[in-house]
Every structure is written in structure tokens, then in C-alpha cells.
Image (cartoon, rainbow, N blue to C red; front, side):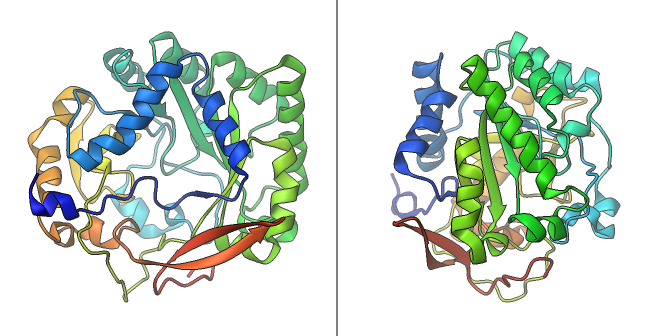
Length: 360
């Protein structure tokens, strides 16, 4: 291994952090892997090991399938409502034929898919059918990120019966704080649905879908204990995200030394129109590396453009040659803030020179 390889800093799962107990975190992981423990352990080991070893697997570990690049909320910090986003991104729902073709190829070869990226996946009219189809083809973990506005008890029952394994609900703050951000969802409606979901799971002895709540830190910071106490009794894990530069406004950015991105060894990201982005943080399709309408996942994963992305990150400060990478939160330096829930301290890793005002 070269000296450069030895010095590389490869952040794994940077940007999303638990504020929960070690016991609940362990149980969350246990439930995620229940029924496929050996394969799950291998999948999670590879998630960290492959990027650090700069090793390309035959297929990605995760495929992001963006069922919708459109959302029905207007959150102040979200790039999807900007004119610039709409100039660069084909705002639509993924075609069923494209979805099934991808799943037919990767079933039994890719352990996990995520049915979301930039928009609200539950707006897809065949959302439940997508879950069922993926599970029938051998995808072990199907997850999604949602604002939760559609998670009524009946809809949850449908996705649970279809086999959804993991739901992350974005909940930025509680009460009035939440409603100022997540318009037009009402906080009490969200909580009613979350309580009903928890009751449904308990009545049937279900461990999955595991439910994770996450909120952007500035919306949580002033009422951390209340935030945790509100959600923890009804979900499996409570987490938070330091506020990133969603809107591309930052001009003073400090970067980590010897940064190398992990994503090109972990996941492949397919947009709703079939265009494949080099990573999950290319919100505006700036660097397209393939087209799933015309190429297979395997071809794109091992293709010239994806290999060029890997080569870029193998060079010292190579990421600076990419506009997408320069704007990304992964290579940014952080500064620590300490917070507390009950008697338990945890660390918030805010990005240096990043405004903590939502929408800035």
C-alpha cells in the first residue's frame, strides 16, 4: 500500500448521527439484519472496508433508485424548490419498466436498495408495488426516506405487508418549529400516524420496518430533550443531521486533508429519469456517469466514467477538480458541539463556516 493510501481519510456515514442510547442503536442494527444475519454482517463490513481498501466489488452494495424527483413540500432549506434545480433535473416519477429492469438485473447481487433520493418517493403511484417487486427478486433490504406526510396507518400497513425494511422520517423539530419548516404537514397529524404505526407493529410483533427519525440540527438544538422524548417511545432510533449547504450559498469552505470519497465503492445512484449520478450528493445532475435506460448497472459500475471518478479521488486533493465534490459536505472540516439527552452526552459535528440558520 502506498504512503498516500495509508494517509487517506475516508469518512463512512458522515453527516447523520444518532442521539440515542447504545442499547437502542444495537437493537436497531439487530432488527435490520434479522433473518439474514450473516449476509447483513458481510454487507455492513464491506460498506466500510471496500472504500478504505479502494476495492471495487462486482456490483455496488446499494443502489439508490429515485422513484420521484418531485416533492409536495416547500421546505426552506431544500434545493428541489429552486429554479436552478428544475433547470438541471428532469422532475418526474420513475417509469415502471426502468425500475423492474434494474431490479431484475441486481436481484440477488445487490443486498440493498433505497427508494429515494431528492424527491418524495411515496408520491410514486406504484410505491408499494415497487417494494413488493424488489423483495420478490431477492433484494434483502429495501429502505426509503420520507417526510411522512403519506404515512397513514393504512398506507403503512400496505408497505409493511409488501416487505419494506426501513423507513427514515425527516422531522425537523417539534410543534411550531416543525410546522414552519415542513409545510403543510401538521405536527399533531405526523405524531398521530407515528403512534399508530408503533401500535400496529407492537400488536403484530413486527420488528420491521425499523423506523428512524432524523432532523436537521438547528431545528432540534433548542429543544433536544423534548425532541428525543417526543419521538423515542414510538420509533426505533432518533438521529440528527448537521445543517449542510443545501442551497449552495457557502463561499468560505475549509477542507479535510487527504480526503477520499467512499461512495464510488459503496453505491450507485439512479435518478428518476434513469440518468446515473456519480454520487448521492450530486443534486443537480452535474456529473452524469451513465444512463440506466441504455446500460446495465454492471456496465455503469465498471465503466470508464465511474473509474474516472475513482481515479480522481486517488489523487492528492483530486476532489478539488470536481465542482460537485468541492460543494459536497463530505470533504468539509467540522467543529464539535456537545449536546445532552438525559445524562448522555453526544457530539454534533457542524461544518466549519456553515450558517446554522435554516434556509441560508
